Length: 133
Image (cartoon, rainbow, N blue to C red):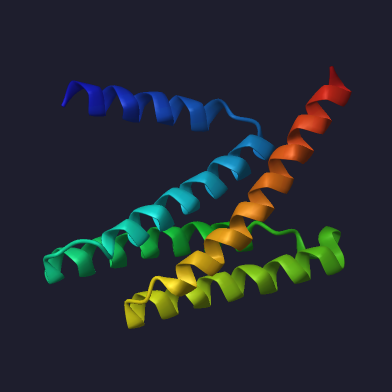
């Protein structure tokens, strides 16, 4: 129990002190982690537990995607923000479909898309930090 509390405190400090770009990366990582847990949940033999694991983790991933969508600056971001908003909407809909039909295939689609976005974001952060140094 002590390890869990220590991990939660560490995570809270990491979130509180992270720069905005790093926070976005952490959100991508969280959504991908919840989708991986949901995908693994399909292997659960007990139906009630399978439904619970899949539902809860897909809901968490959708909430993160909604947060990412809500933080887009539609005025300054222009066409890029509009396209990202549409892409987040698509990903949320795919996870909703996976949850309703208890089908892991839409999760794989979203994991691939979000993984690509996360990789590009991480590369952009690395490049901007090396330029600043």
